Image (tube, rainbow, N blue to C red; front, side, top):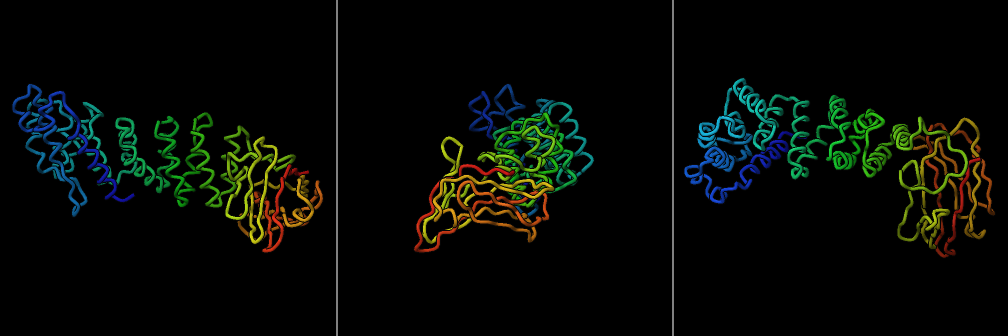
Length: 379
């Protein structure tokens, strides 16, 4: 995540301080005048200073020049004005003095929009990713309304594999923002490696939201990280490992790719029956493709399938069971026969996990394929 995005987020957080309503209604409209009249002059000057913070696009920084005078007056009126101290720290060109001022402010309070904005800026300037991560987390805890701006910044930090341990420490505390973070991060396949390392390093008792786990499994699938997807699926299901597939596979589709993914497209579809005991398929003439697929873990012995279905022979002969390695040349397929059909995989596939698919093809001018796949069992 670039400095520009972080500075922009810090600026939006900081100017939010200038929008916080004070009990004195006059301060909402004319903070400078209110500062002169209000018995709470420190707060009014502080608000006046925050309202004068600007973003400098050329230098990619926050400009607090106009905030110096009211910030200094806020400190004169109230020595514990940490927001004012943070603004003066940002205005300082002396790095040592800036750090000392921010340390003093944080010693008094961890709250404050400008204070946390200053912490973001100084962390970026110092290239201190750990401190930036901690600041982003604290900002989300204190100001959850800023989630839309802060979550992408957290996701950006996920690009750095050195921060995986820091993310593990944060996420094992089960913060409120964790679910949205996982889902947002999982939209970026290039982060799959660090997402996987972080998720699998969490203690097993850590609660991760249902939709977050589903999103993580999907991104691991897109990145062809099948071993990692299997490890996560095993953890979700409370297993030590995913065993080689045996017995009836069922039709569950909650956790793709280790459970079924059904395709519903123009001209063909596969849809689970309402009772969950079968899958309805349909392919119109002129259409064809993969109707459903899932990963299965292969064993050391020859794989034999038994497929039960309600298709007539004209349809069954155009429906195939397929098995293929996610990467590589290994591939097997065979057409269905009368139900139940016994199908032997007569070749060795050089992969631990393979895609098991239900595919069908109805050439133009042929009858629609329609019926149910009742069961697929690995013998």
